[in-house]
Length: 337
Image (tube, rainbow, N blue to C red):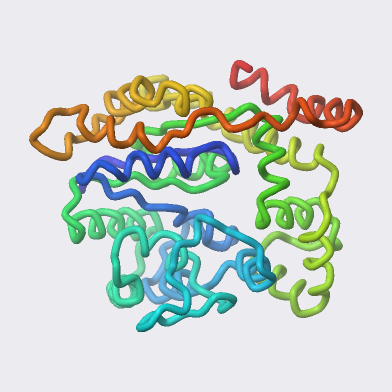
């Protein structure tokens, strides 16, 4: 077994991307961005043994929601693949494999080649539990890139904390959370989640949120995606989405010993980054990345914070704010807000 499993979990738009970027300044840590959130929900935590070629097939798939939004010009800052540059395989708007669009370019300057290498390695693997496939892949990527440990971070991952615990029973988890009102408002402004939450709530018809169903929606009613991308759905839908994720995570967290789960507030991360990152370093037992002392990388990481973003909730009309507060109230209490 390689390095112990470490995860950053949170809702959508909670600040986990910033935290991952901060942790990535430590040259000994492999940060795996968004691997799980892009895999088909009907497959990603399957309990049966999975042949390597089947996992490779799922890694090759694009996420239809991401493709639908990006080909319509929606901005998705997490996608860092160099579309259209000389020598690279994909152009903007192409259906790109999720991991290749987001995770792999953060590990290698030649993401197409590394992705091919990953697929070949996975395809050659016999049937085994998905948990072992994932662990083997993360351990290999860490070793290949000269890192000593790995941390996976996916948006909305607090929602499936129970699955992560089941797959990685020895893991440690850092839960970063943000004021629910602000997280919900940020979700509605973020193209992928603006459409995704609306679809989940039946505003494009009654469909399952699976790759197959989303592809069918695009084929049969692409105009619905255009409409949802151009409009603002009721804010309480996003508040409820945030709350449901928090409540799902809390249900799993209650079964964990306190020493494997650390709560971190986004608001403290951006205003007191050195203090928060030091606490995370101690909790996860992270390595120092050079010979200048254990805190050297933390100073570099802290410089990525630009302080508190402007608060949006106070600018909402009173009736809209009331609906949002009601949707978030129970979950806000669960995270001590």
